[in-house]
Amino acid sequence: MASGERVAIARSTGSVGGLARLAAIAEQFGYAYADAGLGGIRGEQLMLVLVPDPRHEAQARAERNRALYPNAGDGVSLPPLVPQEVELLEARISFDFASQFTPKQRLAVGIPLATAVAVAPCIRFGLHSTAALVAGLLWAAFMLLAPLGLVSIRRKRAQYGARLRAAGFLPVTDARGRLRYIPAP
Image (cartoon, rainbow, N blue to C red):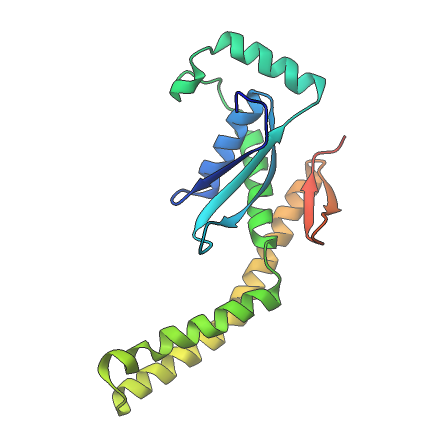
């Protein structure tokens, strides 16, 4: 980040809250949250993208914090975080995660994956009536749960969107056609 360029952070473990705290710290040093999603070779990593914030107030805050916290690189000597700002970043990151894939894309990945998991007992124990019954029941359960998962994601997106709109964020469509929320100018 010291170079002042775009930064993409990949984490194999962690949480949305942890990414939000990391983004909040970066904002104290002249960066702004840009995007989040799943990445890595198999999509198993949490990705956070930060970009330099060119606004005058962001650069002034960064200079002030660099002077007040010269050892910030140790991960301990950091400026205090404002809980409301972290919560808003968490809502933005969560919304972006929930918006990364369309419902059709989720089903296109989920149905074959659920089928493979359901067939696993037959592969492991051979194709006989008990294994086939277990496989059939697992597959049916997965297919019944799929619409519930899509509804849950839709509800979460609506909740995060309402929270962000109430905080003054503006809905925009990015170059990939995905709905995002950005701070008001």
